[in-house]
Length: 469
Ligand SMILES: *Cc1c(COP(=O)(O)O)cnc(C)c1O
Image (tube, rainbow, N blue to C red; front, side, top):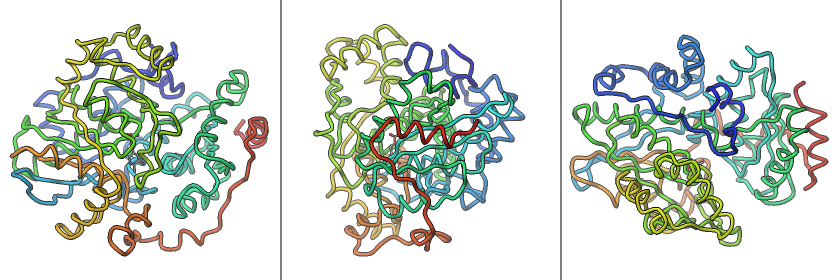
């Protein structure tokens, strides 16, 4: 297993599996008590320095202070908890994770990743050319995190005409010379295939120092752990609880990165009762937690929904969870994934009953949402609490409400702001959500985007011409 800095830049472990720490730092009650007075950047410093043990903690503190600023997140309060009300004896709250530059929770990790990349690369005298594909939120979060970095450039493929006007404008209006938007005639999977083809050319990849920032990046998972601690400590304060009392989290889920960070927080000793995996109509994960069968979908079976950032056919981070559930059995996990690639599914409950018992004991539970329940939840929160939420957050609230327990706060993670998904908000409420200040004119800004055909060689030539040396 490599050190943290290598994992940060490599993405994958040496055997091709996903990197995981050999053991997790444990946070006891005393430490939690000390954490409860810390501002977000200081809390992030405490948590991240326990993982990134090959970087000086004073450096980590500086990077956290640069990542989580009032200027980037609109307020000195990073990830504030907004109370809604009591339902069935349980406080219901929203953890605001979407106040960053691209109005989605992915900024929380990506801003940190940008700081870590710049620091490690500059020290080593190296550069990195990040290549990725996006259907919306990941690409813009990556670009806004890397736009002012000197050691990093970004090549982001997006499907021509398939993103919302807001999402397009958000990415394409960036004018920095190290940010390259490439519009591909095709769908997201075509973009993803081109990225995979370039990454599979190991010689090209090494020569041009191609890196990734996709959701399996361990440093993203690690950075997301911080806000579970923040949410917990805020709930303790807001509801007069004691450190040690349980709190539940409901998490709109796609690639299983966000909720897996919650699982890591819980495994580190954070008193989490339930972790609720909320899916939309693409219910791969809900099916697993109900039945023990993990069955990935074909692209034909993957629906386009009104919570598009959760439209997945398989959950890329799920492998890490299964690895934990098998008791860190790397060979057993690899065998399950071989079965998955051969038959498209595995049955954990039948083939590894002990691992399935661990799943049950993890208190991870699930549920699914539909277009109608999404709209209803948006309407209900608007009228009951005067609170506008986006379609993904609505999935989390809808499913979270099915798991309320008296006295246990239910914290629903806000994964995007409603203004990003105007059409659905209009359908639910008859009017669009208000824009945050400074973004009213976003769509009329000049856009900078290159068109590229579905041609891997053309993509390579573009990279050769524009990559950092
Ligand atoms: C990425 C994303 C999700 C899904 O998060 P995962 O970590 O992939 O489970 C949910 N909602 C929004 C708005 C997103 O951008």
